Image (cartoon, rainbow, N blue to C red; front, top):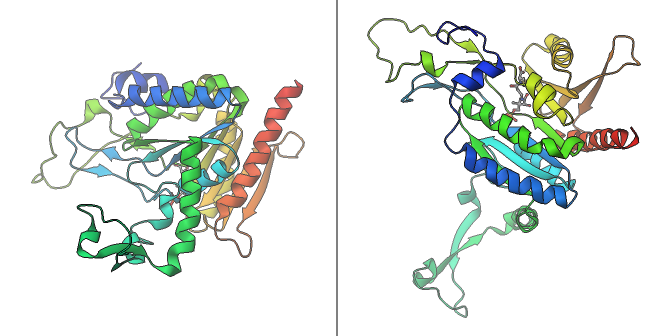
Length: 337
Ligand code: 9Z3
């Protein structure tokens, strides 16, 4: 390998040898192992959903970092539909990004304080010492919000009782890559019963620890120039070594719509995984394109557009319905071979 410090493209192997795993990795892996073992025994398919953006720190004692736009809507919404479809879900998300169920009441779009009100407490009910009721007041949900809250709360409690959701979080692109590798290796024994739904917006560039300034970068020298290295292409080892039988779905995000299909096809050619879901930054909530290899078609590929149906609000409902069917067919195919 070339010496870290001069390198611009890391192989996955060099990357994992020279960068540092997050300190909580082993603890997270133990949780994943117990979760996978249980659901394997119970015969449930397991999906890893990654969600939200990764950061790229510029200093070792990090004050500044690069980030991206992703709020984690795609991942959090999709996770709910996978749970509804009977999957056990490992939800690996950017710390503080949207999460299944609580996403419905996010602090920015639907702040929970807006649908609570203070009302008189019921004089017939026992007063808890130290509760707001001591002053004769209590917290109530606005009648207009009760139905929505009850629906979400019921689903959330059902998932908690069933133990079908495991949540892990990452912040940096390093956390993400080390965690993805570790979780993939834990899912490997599931073979075709494991799905990977890689919706996180992962940085293409990073600053290796060896090139980082230890302390806060100082101003006063005019402009700041930073040369970043390319993040290793992780789909290749994921598909070839860590989980060769897993049903791997990656996402391709573009802002130039004419690049969407060519780039998705290129990813399938390079990494040989199952499916690329292409989405345009501005149209991603209304339409996405499923790009697959297809030996029967003239150019070797098949594209299927999935659009938000009239009267529906979440395109993920359609996407997950389709994916669940594709995954079932893939498992079935193995059964016959
Ligand atoms: C996506 O394309 C996701 O659908 C979005 C979801 C990030 C657009 P939001 O969180 O957005 O709902 O606001 N994710 C993958 C993006 C990505 O990093 N893809 C890499 C690439 O395009 C390859 S895996 O090169």
